[in-house]
Length: 243
Image (spheres, rainbow, N blue to C red):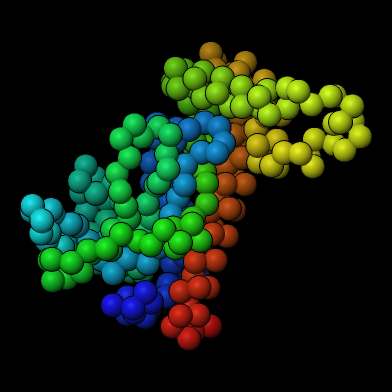
């Protein structure tokens, strides 16, 4: 099968389906339980899936793709049946990859075919093109730092240490002459500026300065998520010759 044949078989989602899917991804989990608190975060891969919203049961070297008639929270976090999922989101699907919180990475995402014998990993170049990196602040909750203190401390220490290693030997006059913004990624700089407030909030359930960062960062991440979906949708539509 040619690289783009499988894409041509699926209608590109509408703008409404894309917007709903962005909200679905952002709200689908309590992300502070699963994602790092600090950059680079984890990679979210957004891709067209011929069986988006369907279940897959692995049987040795074979598999069964089946329709979900009734949403089940524990088996399918979306709580949606296949019919409702496809109506709301079309063929959109996502995969969390390159996540430091995941000790044993699982290969994916897989594209399954209905014959029960054939599946393919999404090509690495598409994974790179169709992804963005997000952190636990995608869906923040005021007490989340105090609810995950060990992860927060470990990840904060690693994040700040990486900055010290990078800038430790650079004379301070360098920053005064050129400005830090020219030497560091804007996202990393944003987190580094808030790191002190976040550390102070780690032992508290509600810290106003930290809550302010949480709210503003959630907006930034949802904006990035939606922009990535639009980028994927544009490539998808172009392959189909659509608008």
